[in-house]
Length: 199
Image 1 (cartoon, rainbow, N blue to C red):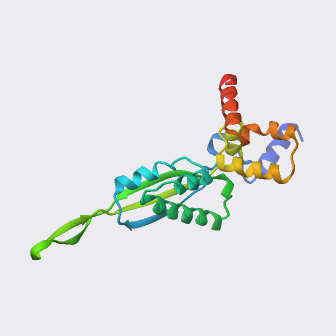
Image 2: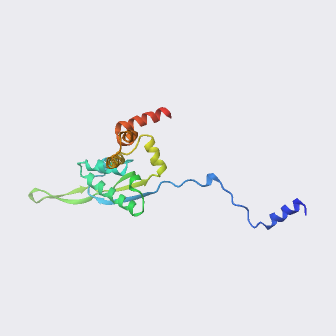
Image 3: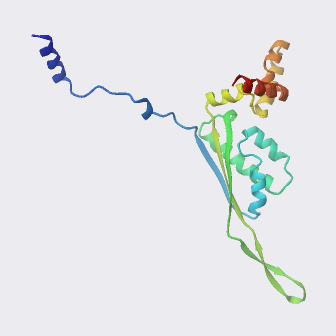
């Protein structure tokens, strides 16, 4: 039997074509996201949006520390929704250290009317504003989180945790200096400046 007949015999016995791999067809999955919402809030949507804009794009630890210093009525409201979103992520098995606030959307609801009691037996109507808020959290992958650290954009909440770990482990001076781009604001600024120069 010649080589051509042997090749033809093998091709005839093959039931299906071999699997092919197309790199463009397999894209990496996006970072997982989840939401928490609260409806029927007796508060102005504009005032609530001014508070929600403070935490957009922040790390979960930084967002909670920012909301703790907000003295407006919308501060506790946004904080309660953010805590609910964090618990939802923990129940799904996501890492708390890599949670970021992706979006904080505030919607305006229909104003409900309330009786305004006036003097001399007169009454009127008051329109009480209502709003709703949806907070979307995102878990960044370890690669994306490592890129933020290398660029000098480590979250301040994570920096506080790292400082505590260094203190508990009695780290020496060389280790503290090597971790300055994570633990101090000056170190992060220096790392961002050096990264821009290298790029």
